Length: 196
Image 1 (cartoon, rainbow, N blue to C red):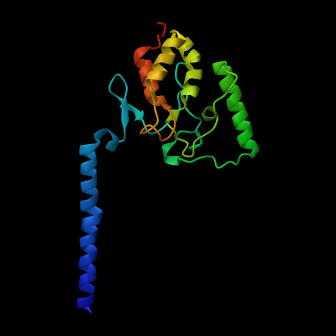
Image 2 (image 1 turned 90 degrees about the horizontal axis):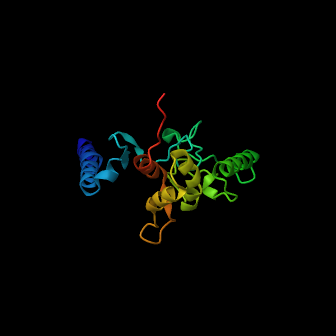
Image 3 (image 1 turned 135 degrees about the vertical axis):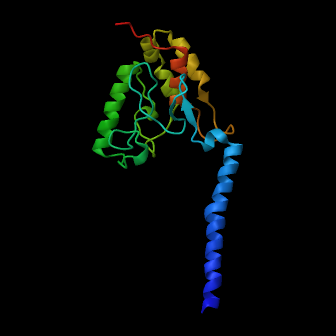
């Protein structure tokens, strides 16, 4: 009986060490060497060198001086990475319709734009989409410019500089990473608070 158990035990231990320890350590080491920024979470830092988020995860921004991202259904208050999910509301659900109508009205009021890009009022499947469409970002430029005391053309230029094209030239759509753009706005056009 031990003659039959011995190969099973040895195989289990060998594969556990090989596939459960050696292989993950090798892949992690290669990833750290080949793509250090990505393997560490694509973390972004502010001007003071403090980590403020990941380029891969959306987060909420309050205030007219910031580019606003897609709405989030992740968690009770949105943008909760531990509760990543969509709302699972169907297209004829009254809750979804009311939420999108309210979002569209708020967007029109803050931007002065008649048309509302879909990504300004719809949540993504994960609820943590870090990007918005260039159309959505550019529509917010006038509001951001007013709050920062600069011309809309300067904010539009900054948004264009932070617009990423399609991956490999044909995959996906052009996009603006909200956190990267907001860090660039803070660096280039800091909000002046009156002394008081």
